[in-house]
Amino acid sequence: MLVALLLATFIGLALGLFGGGGSILSVAILTYALGMPPKAAIAASLLIIGITSSAALLAHLRSGLVSFRTGIVFGGAGMAGAYAGGRLAVFIPDGLLLAGFGLMMLITSVAMLRAKPVAAQLDAADSRSGRRTALMLLRGLGVGVVTGMIGAGGGFLIVPALVLLGGMPMKRAVATSLLVIAMQSLAGFAGHLGHSSVDWQVVGPFTLMATLGSIAGGVLAQRTPQRLLRRGFAWLVLLFGVFVVARQLPDAVKHSALYQHVFVARWPWWLGGMAIASVVLGLLFSENKLLGVSTGCAELCRLPRSADARASWRPRFLLGIALGGALAALLAGYSPTLSMGSFDSLASSGAARLSLLFGAGLLIGTGARLAGGCTSGHGIVGTALGARSSWLATALFLLGGFATTRVLLLLGGGMQ
Image (cartoon, rainbow, N blue to C red; front, top):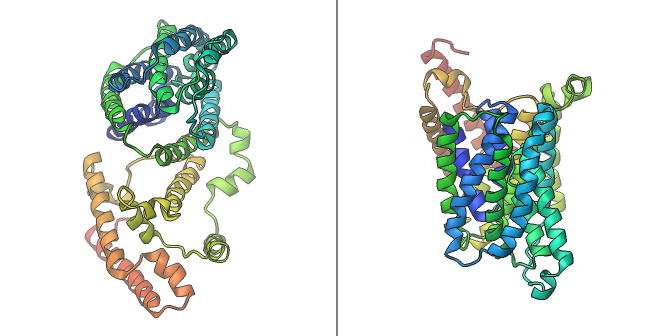
């Protein structure tokens, strides 16, 4: 529950910053992290996003960027579609709903990655023409149906429509989309009433944390370099989308020999070594870059105040490592947990485990800084280049690991 509440805050933050995007994760979190049935998670998500986007809208009202006329036209059509989608959802199997939701996440993430800011405002008279109004009503109706059926606010479908059909600059479209999301999400929730129940003990705290995040996101929206955050969030949505779609694959596919060998079974050590070597050599020969994680972590810490760090490839490389590892685990059938194997006996609560992980990370970072690099920089790249300092550092890394393992085994009575 603690992890889910932290993710709820992140959902609200993204909603306040981007006018959408956070809602696309709420169904996945409610379903897979909190164990809600799919249809109940969709109904709860609509209520949560309706309240959260209303709170984010309040933060944008002071900026004067919300276009109520356009938002009400688009949102009115969206409300009708969302209510209809909510009533139709009862007739669709859970698996098909989740598969559609996963595909929606994939489409959304690609649209986010390909989106380009629109600075020019279209001619006002043209934007009020009958043809544009008709297109906006149809787009609002379609987005509303999707919202009602799969429980996502549709912000990254709404924002492009407001920019292209409503002639809005990007910031105004983001602010106005919150009004539309609130209207159609609450209408979609109304469509689910009567055939979906809401667990208020879960939805209440989740909504509160998401709302606080949305208010903070609305305040930060005018000060944050949104392009970097948008791309990072798009990759996260893509990861969740692949996970949801993978979970809905037919058993014949998941149990096939090819899928098991590629995604489930542990690869041979020599194949893993060849894969790492190909990445290292590829970076060296194609980009003249040396692989190293600790340097990327240092640049990650300097992102808010260093233009050079923001332009560097290393933070994005670190994001790829994290997302790649998570993706491999998800495709193998594992869900994110705070389980730490043998160390679970040392920390039973979620807060204690987070504290232990934080302390371990602090020690690893301090050690890497003292050694002038981490295991990847010294053990993979430095030794390949023949650096004597890297050979010495790698030997000490291994000896320290062996010694620590023996001590823990003795203290734990031979725990496995």
